[in-house]
Length: 190
Image 1 (cartoon, rainbow, N blue to C red):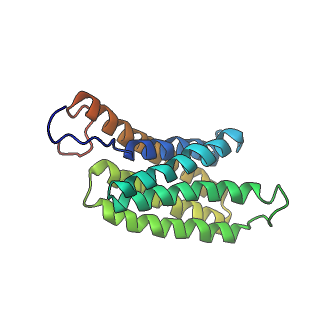
Image 2: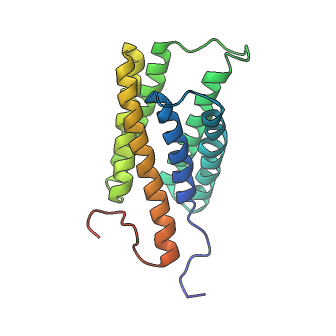
């Protein structure tokens, strides 16, 4: 093994991919392409939720505060969202109304805006992911607050793009490491 090479794997791509696949699937629903079904719920609990929380713990161990906060928080977001949908069906809570969802999504948008500001010191790919995610949350909040279906459909397409960008970013990190060179650039100026 070469001197100076880390013996610890980068957990970030796993978190990005858990976020990516779950975001794409949910936003296929928001764009009115597929129904809200078990595929989205399962991804929300396991890959978007639990896997990202594990990645957050791994980032903590690596000393990455941004990664810890982002992955743990978005993992909890996905589990919370699934709970919002399923707890009322199990008779454990009252269903969320449109304004409650608008506030929930709007606060996540504000949280994401702060993380976006943090990405301005990082690569262009992450800036795009967090910028488009901020826009997605705001559109979803507006869609719930106004109950205008077309706003949620537009949000769905923004979410699909955001998810694809996260998939690209995660896989670029993996493939760049595997090949030992930049195969898929993460910055506009590479």
